[in-house]
Image 1 (cartoon, rainbow, N blue to C red):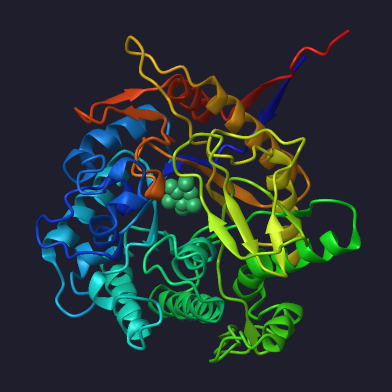
Image 2: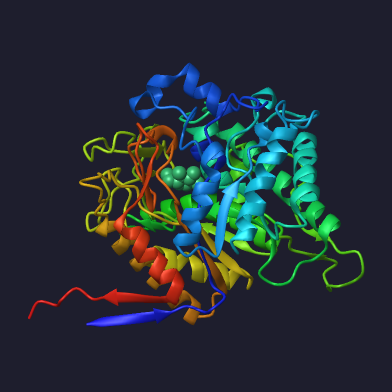
Amino acid sequence: MSESCRFPPDFVWGTATAALQIEGATDLDGRGPSIWDDFCRRFPERIHERSHPEVACDHYHRWAEDVGWMKRLGHSGYRFSLSWPRLLPQGKGAVNQAGLDFYDRLVDGLLEQGIAPNVTLYHWDLPLDLQSWENPEILQAWLEYAELCFRHFGDRVKLWSTLNEPGWSTMHGYLTGLHPPCQRDPRRAMQVTHNLLWAHSRAVALYHRIWGRPEPGLGIGIALNLSPVHPASDSPQDADAARLADGLLNRWFLEPVLLGRYPEEVLEFLRACGSAPHGDLDFAEPVSSGASEGGSIPTVDWLGVNYYLPHHATADAPTTDFHLNISGDPQEASRFSIQGLFRFVQNPRGRYTDWNWEVDPDSLHEILLRIRDLRRLPVYVTENGIGLPDRLCEGQVEDSSRIAYVTGHLRAVHRAMQEGVDVRGYYMWSLMDNFSWLNGYRKRYGLLYVDRQTLQRTPKRSASWFAELARTGVLQVQEPASPS
Ligand code: BGC
């Protein structure tokens, strides 16, 4: 049995990357250091095979070749991030002209090929001089950076997002301590989520002040990591645990971004444990000319969804314990447990990758419907993909499980679109194998295989499959033969 899903002709097909993960040239042409460069230098043992981003995919020099690949792979859009320390080496103040020149070349090169840039301002590479999102000067520096980017590139870049995954970066930067700046303090973590969401909302308002309200489907958004949290059992305790985890990991970010306020239930919980953030908690953007009745309207023009995996929560959480599988050895279990609150466990019926990430397209469908029910607005899947230990054999990379993964998830997207979710595009993670943070270079996500010795790009089997999908806009789904 086979089925086909037809996507609209203007649906955006593309891939996503991030500056630190692909550019390399970290010490070249005036770029300043970021907290990730510093972390990798100071704690090499925390990263798989002591990998670092100094060369990465050398996209800084090979960008033209990479844009050529995008063209061949049928891209109509490409999501990438600007490196804040390449543009403002100290985080604020002096602008690095070589940085502007680099991104001018990239943006113009994309446009020449008919590929629409979708630019993220911040994908975790905070300039080292700024140190942390707790820094009292951060908001001002951030707005200076945002303004520079909006004014310089805004005539050509029509899709922007402020932050990539504030949930994931705060969780690991300030709660588990596994990412820089390596803090482990739930109270400070919640304050940082607020600092980030606040910075996001101010940047959105700034963009609208400079460029006005865009046409539907364009403008400024944010890329949130969203993972439905299912109860691990049907006990009422596990239902509560899942509800709390969902409140902290999903609703805490979704609701201020879409509705302009935090979820009251989660705020109450945080107040009760003394972890509620301080500051202005009302995110709605003031309306100048009575355009909406309530006097204020929610901010983003579109929402970016980064979806990889769901969670399963149990209330049985006797300790606080965090660990991420960084080796890709399935025996190295990931652990996420907050004493007395909730602990994530494996789904006994789930399918998992070697890094213990569950493969579950239905949860993407679920999250898209939740967004629809909160607020109807254009949505882009800004990241989705699978990390595999791909191997190059006689010039070929056989990655049929990537094709199966993307097929399953796009089918879920298509189903959600038929049910009224306004999905405008899909950016697969990623264009090419890259520096996968703590996982180093072993966890490969690309359509292009990158040889770590020569940096040569080789299209995997999924690359030609993706090109055909983007060209036709039709996803062919082969049902597995049913046992008779
Ligand atoms: C991040 C990417 C990352 C990907 C795969 C997402 O959380 O935005 O930067 O490489 O996951 O791990």
